[in-house]
Length: 226
Image (cartoon, rainbow, N blue to C red; front, side, top):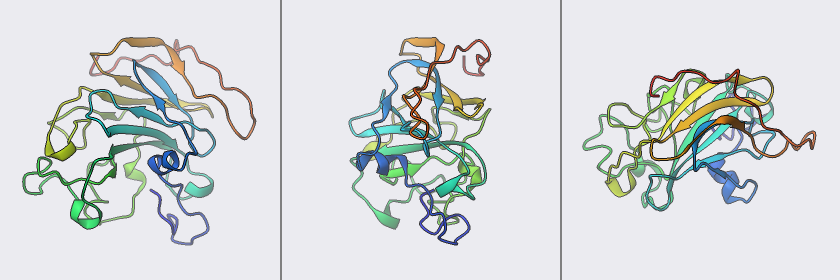
């Protein structure tokens, strides 16, 4: 999803670099989620909006959530949706030796995974298997849920050093909210629930208008895991 040639291989619009890379470069300060609730992921192309979920994970392991749209650098991405990244800052292996996916011997307990892994919504692990460079099916779109394991892959389980731990973190993509972004529900039963407000990031650099907060009366939904 940070394909240098672009999704049409023309080099005219190389893919936007990953949420993790933008944080490392100091371009964005991620928003740490410390409460269950409904949140608005504004397009990361235009907003400094990346959410970080570290609750339940060992030091250096966490999730990053961003909203990508088919525009500018991501022209040709094939749609709009969330990208959910799994980061393990302590991962030792790099390159092809770190590829891990279902069906691999003793995975995920064998410790094989990328330091910066895209949790692909299609569950096909095409990046790890070198079947593609990322495709529209990797996007998490309304109605999709990322759950804790071990019954589904990808999941939100911690896997640092091959030690598998169920975090109980769950994410459900809700819907597109006009031009403002895409709403999602983050839940961990051990965290307080702030379900009366749709929280946004601060401002749109294009307009310099401060983004507000949106009441959830029209956004609240019944979730299969509530």
